[in-house]
Image (cartoon, rainbow, N blue to C red; front, side, top):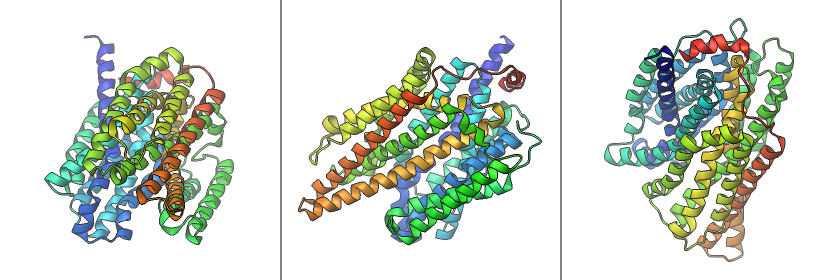
Length: 486
């Protein structure tokens, strides 16, 4: 067997292990939702404190993505990936053994931090393992498949484990996975120093941007409860904005910035991240608001909701794995990206027509199918565009930025659309509409606005992205990357 073939096999095995680590993080964002009622009963949470089981994770996950990516560039992506997996696995053990509210919430916050580090450096590890455009497109397809399918697997697995065993097992199931990923990464991922060796960590930038992101996430996730025009929400968003201004001022002056501002001078990087915010807003709206429609209007159980999402996720997964890479190699990134986003927008518009007396085959399945197709086609080129023009020494940071764009876009989009839906429902109820019709009226508005977000992202991609497939690998990068492949 040739050395090149062994190297190739090792690369793909390494990709599978990286994706298993990412799957564990993706699962954890949805697996908990199904178990919340059991956790509430067992540990005596009230409605207000229960949201912190989710929010504690969201806060640290959203806050540390940028810093996690940059630390990977400085100290080595493999080292940071292993540290993140270790932290996440130990925190999962603490969550699983929790017998008090405080311990569970604290462990969830640590889990979020570990998850942020793993998410931020995994993309850069994949980009650096696969430097040939065709292989890179296929590898990104596998990564997209894991991200796409993980959410619905989480809903099903959460229901299964909670019903069959107890809520503790939704966390304890991470232990064998975490140990296996750690051991296999040690064997398969080559140990390389950080690309940005010799640079110092920009402590001022790290502190201001992390605090800014955490305050913004906190304000957003509590916005519906506290009120969007309340002193708390506006005050926190104001402080987050001021910290962001301070961060940009620091980055413009410091010698080794956490986030070199010239990155946003790369047109594709800047446009891809704006598109990421808009698309995540549309996709989060689809996932959460259609789940509410299925449960509150059509009367589905949590397990039935998980099964209802399965066709869309299977389509998304199939396209991420196979067709998307072929489309990218044939047409470049720009065309498939815009086309996929337009399909997603069409799927959301179909959902906007769902009535009170809806049926799965007539009113849910068509929209789900288009959304699955659209997301499956678009995710791969979106990630390639966001990462393709960036030097290897900044790939961790670029990965952190695109993950942050998705996270903040999703949280903001969901908050805005949930508020619009709620206001529309209240207005219709005040005008004398029956409760279910008022609910559906609110959801319809949210789906239409979500479709506008996806359509705007498609338009931005079609008009502003530079044509062409991917940035070529520069001669200076090749030796390091050849070693990495082995």
